[in-house]
Length: 418
Image (cartoon, rainbow, N blue to C red; front, side, top):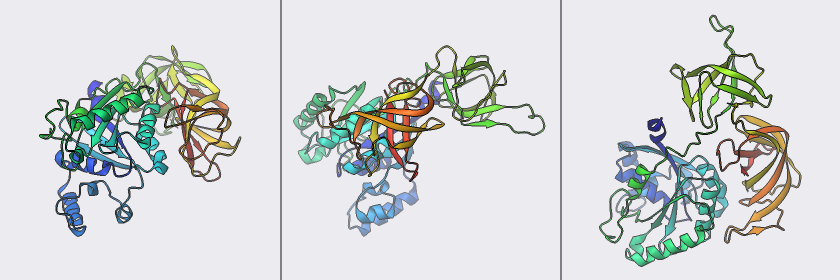
């Protein structure tokens, strides 16, 4: 089980415009030899056309042509690379304030977040916003990279001052594991290889830190949750009596013979079989995709949840949610939306905005009840039928929701259930 969980680490990168995120990811890919020859050739040619003497590392991540032409990064770009110790998925999110929603998207499944800080500018508003969102999304590991150390002559005091600034701000946040690394993404100091310019730093490089983060405990294993995505009725010879329930385990584990309860009906049964991609298995863990069969014939459909009878989730129609508003149009009072929770879609209404959070000082603005793009607010949501929820702090998958505007079909908000 540990090997299965440790082989893949997802991390997100965040920072202000021009903090060097694309260069950092390019440096990671380049120095860890994770770039194909044709990619290398294309980037070398593009760098020459732009008049660069060496390789423009940012081009490894700025893959879209119009991004390059405009000189800005405009979306969440996912990159993949592998080292002998781990596989990685990187979500590279833009630094512009209007793209806070992209960071929420990229960070929602991450094990770790890399927050970049320009050594010349220190902790700024965007740093605070990104750190706050990372902790709001309960990303277990935060890596603060103080970049462009070459532009402050690799000065130790510049680094320690920024560490103090960040610690002062983050003392108000719930961060369980923080690492601080002084780097130069452009020159490669402390990214993959240790820096000769900073003998005063005795910690690991960024890649070493990513390879050695302990992530086996990041997946919640206590509460067994299985949202049903589809009901399988093959109706072919040998399977005429087969009725399976397919989906991905959100958390915990299931064994053949476990007593389970189906929600919202509340009916109980025993797991008769579990089938994975390779055939029947005795036990399955999050985040495996499997099909379950039960010993009793129960009416189950998409959106229902199968949970171990000893600790089922709490069905609820009224939710308190920390909501990040993602849409350019502000929320209209008491508007109706579709709420999506695991595989369950319901109609919902934002009943009340309880308060908005001021990102700069983390204070609650209790008299501000508007919901505009990038606002992070605590709201009360009412649904037409119960959802089987857990608090987000306990379970990132069954504790999260999104809101969809029925008129435009756009995702307008993402939320964490309190």
